[in-house]
Length: 106
Image (cartoon, rainbow, N blue to C red; front, side, top):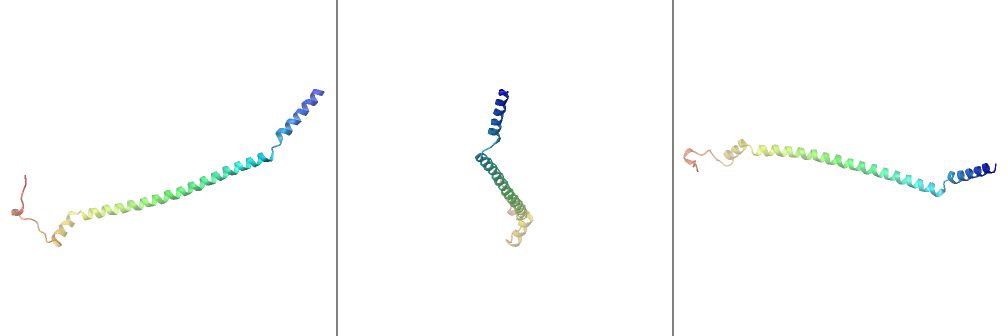
């Protein structure tokens, strides 16, 4: 009988010791959870900002590609042999050389 009572008393002591969590432990757990939540929110906000920056850069890239295409077209137009010949004839009063003006070099 005495062994049973000692065993019951030991179980009660263990239940009392492990069953109660101190106030400071609860504060630590709450602080830890709050820190994790703040870290998650900060990461989410940072990721959203980066997504906006990527969208801006893609928009800027599209605009630059369009400008490049326009400049390539303008360059091709300016280098056009027909355009150069027209400018040479009309503005510079140039004509094609005659046979006697052509000198061949070897």
